[in-house]
Image (cartoon, rainbow over all chains, first blue to last red; front, top):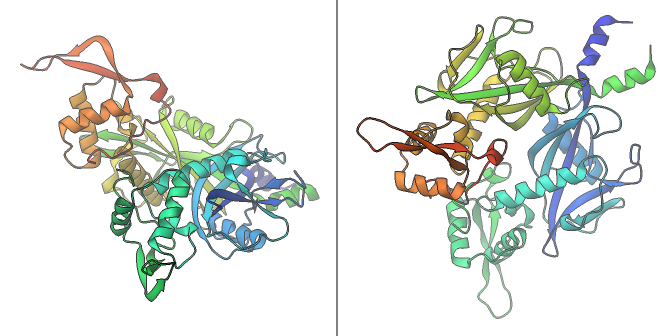
Length: 229
Length: 229
């Protein structure tokens, strides 16, 4: 037996990442769950997640992107670290730390086999502590949406301001005054008009189409006050 | 060799906690650094931290409290999870995940041997990625102080409203209107007067002394708008 390996092993724990991938469909916030192929909890719906691989991952965010790519077939959506969840009982394999991420995408086309989008307010009991992780992510997204560009990542580009307004209202679950909404979007400064692109809808004047400015694809624009302040 | 131990070992990584313990001294935000007794970086000043011990810690927050108690001699100050920092290069011992916490205390008496309180804006280069962790913690604390009860944990109890006002101003580095400050403290609802306790100062009318309400010792009270909104 190699003593140094043993003493190292005492300090080495199961490290995983879990990703709460959210979208807005039918004006509902929905989360991606995937049917687990392996034990523990084989066959159950759970968050996409997996071990951190020290040999390939540059950090936990890198591991989260790899998991999203491999298990959800998604390239690189907006991703931010949520929190770590840890303890002896959350994973039957042993004392574990999971670094959880929240990711947002515009409503995707039909889900792939094994993928299930479920409304966050109507989830079944989830394995591990995934229920708690999802609840934590939803709180974070709703809170941050009050004063930031976060909800833009739920909107397919390009979009009109009224479309984005609808996304914010659906997410926050309350009406937002259209004039103060436009002012807040100006203040956030994260949108740019798509040159020459307008959307004609019914009898109205065609609406300008917008997209997210490149510098806000990976970071947020934050306002000093909330949308309704 | 035990194969199952080996295959487990692939997924087992170095897990540590690091604690950014902050206080306000001489109207400056200061962080506790401790001289490292062991390699790596023996002799250097670094954040109090250590391995997560699966056999004794109930979760990473528990590990952070143990580290604070053992290395800083502090019972259980206000503590919240900051973020995880991970990767192959941040710790010379190998690929590691550190779950970092931020903790706040009222200005302590003289530091113990080996403990050093340094202003966060005048730090030397720190080992590991501790410089980045401290910067991240300071950003978090200053941002959250705009709209929450967080700075109360920097104030020795009991305190007068003008004393607490001074703490908020020192932390935010800007003047705060006294009337809107009192209104915000009312809105946050986290203080209670200490019955019959007043502080006499010079020729002024004695000022009421306050303390934090018990329910806000471990969670924050949040305002809808910032202090200057």
